[in-house]
Length: 358
Length: 192
Image 1 (cartoon, rainbow over the protein chains, first blue to last red):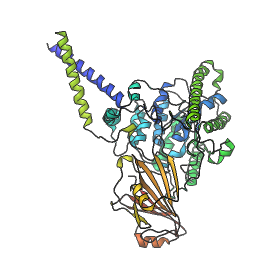
Image 2 (tube, chains in turn blue, purple; image 1 turned 180 degrees about the vertical axis):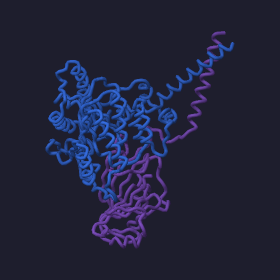
Image 3 (cartoon, chains in turn purple, brown; image 1 turned 90 degrees about the vertical axis):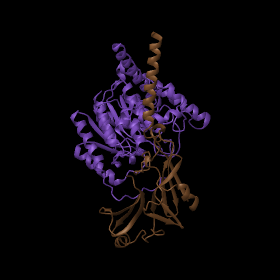
Image 4 (cartoon, each protein chain N blue to C red; image 1 turned 135 degrees about the horizontal axis):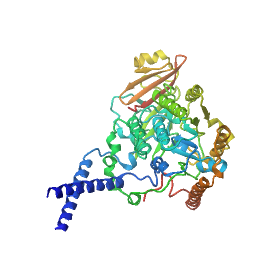
């Protein structure tokens, strides 16, 4: 009788945990349409081919560099570990996380995020952190990123945070409860539409242009971690001009790069040399490049990488080339679909922020 | 007998799941849409108030700016401001990264107001005074002497080599100087 009770209790406990797990999977946001940026961080783990170049950073990396074009033109295997408003410490911990799986030859970090010196917003934190696999890096990332209103336990059990979504569940929540579709191309977020760059508002004068201690501290940790692992760290400022990148910030990053023996390239003054035409190469009036612009940027940057670092042309490797053939097919297919919608409706319907989750 | 045992297990499991689910539902019920409501999205350049803070009322004692008889506070609903001031002379908007909201810039003559989205509304994030045709309620404008700022506002809450920052309520009021004269005036919503 006692044995039966113990078995019953164990079975009930296991079933309860299983049910709660399924419930949790159901209510967490899936980021499959509309706001797909929340899927980016976890997609990395599905990519089993090695990467010689890894980008880390905010939208200025995942929207401005076509990884597929870098492969096509130079045989560079790259991945963008980007996420929306990725803060410097989040980039650092994503780098630590990446090193658990591979050691790239080059890590590229976009410096715009240095303007943030403190946690900003839960929604962005979630999109940058939730997709990480559990590790010390994820725990440290949560601790460094939480706003005052957040609690650690909500990251451990997302059901606590998202339970109220039960009343707004969509078809996608059920469809993608255990599996998700890829939304990026090795981290690159595709947009083929065009909205010409207009005039930007003049930048707000600041009381203090000094980049924050915490932000610069994590940049130093990033440089040290790369050095320890024999990785070349490259600092870049993407060619887009808004949000404003102050000259005073640029000077500080240049000084940091010099002190640490790093390459730093600000691409804003190089728009013409890259071949960018901001009346055609941006989809959101100059904030980010569209695919045409991202391919130009990838070509320019890929050539620079090939000229300056000992990167392998993997197009000669049958196995790797086979994997990338599938990536190219997916890329071309999505491009074709986006152009189809653009031609038919005059705008994208299934992609971008306006796409409604089913 | 066996069927009865299985039924009992199912009932017990259902009770356990329901109890735990109800327990989680007792917690914070903040906006849960795709991880929270929208904010700046890293687009406008500066830090914006965390969306979870929500909009505060204009009556938090912070510095305010008065333009054409309309007093504007940080985190005030922009619709209220627009209703009083009318359509701006120029307008700029940019889509927030990963969100379906817009960061907006409204220019009224020599006054530039930026907003941040929160839910369906836009709230005042900053006000910049561009030239000496407008002044603060304490009579400071672009070109005023540094000493006039001290006389009007007292000792700053913080200062740098080139700026005084006065903090009150949900507002940081910043005066930027060059050659002991004011070259920039901004009201910015506090982020923490």
